[in-house]
Length: 140
Image 1 (cartoon, rainbow, N blue to C red):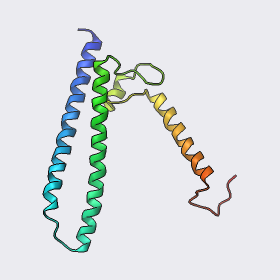
Image 2: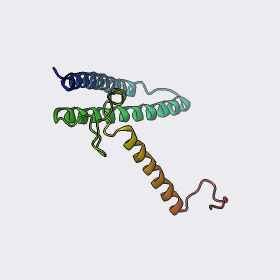
Image 3: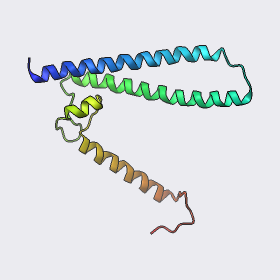
């Protein structure tokens, strides 16, 4: 077997395991949520805490669902022979990065450039919108 075939099998196994863990967590949480709806007895403070907790759990559930989608996309790229190549520069994404972030689509350098560009765009939008947390501070 070549190194690429072994690498792809290892990655497929890792992605499959992570996918299974996330699916189990999502299904368990959905099941728990149905059970929790029947226990909604308590005072206003308890309901407020429960609402806060429910909001956090919903956010976590959304993040897990997003991660599942990314893992599914990574498996499709793996089957197509495109897994591990950077979308931006087409270079190979290092194995270490893929093990830490198995659904990575960019090498670290391209991802950093993308994040920096997003940050600049966000700052420009805030600057041009006139919105400021400190309206009395003069901008240079």
